[in-house]
Image (cartoon, rainbow, N blue to C red):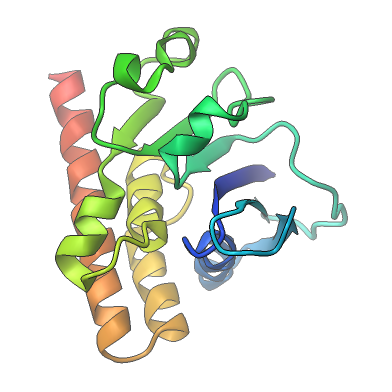
Length: 192
């Protein structure tokens, strides 16, 4: 079973992101569940959402304490909470930022994880370019597909189009695809 924890703020599509991962996983014939955890339910408040993906039925419904993948949709959370808590030693972390690990204050996390397992992607900038809004969720799902191989980009594409039919879906698919290609290029450069 693969466990995912997504951190962000209300209004950034954190809950939608976990739903889209579940939809993409279902499309690939796997079992999945997605559920949020709210503090105060208002725009801008910290929000955490969880997703589990498995080849077998999932029976647990508890919060994800030891994730295989952490997605940080809002880098301002790095200064106020330990979003990397419980990250498995061979896990992955994806941060919505174009800044370096040192600038983000997460060099220690990068150093303790396998090379290339903690990366930043300027998801808000990519989202703005394609959608006119800075909601990073679809962008980060494309990036996560490339980083982890947990699900295929085609499945992300289908999940986004199903959830957001029409022009909104098309714009978000383009943003997710750009992030997917960016992360693949980052991986190729690191391995060259």
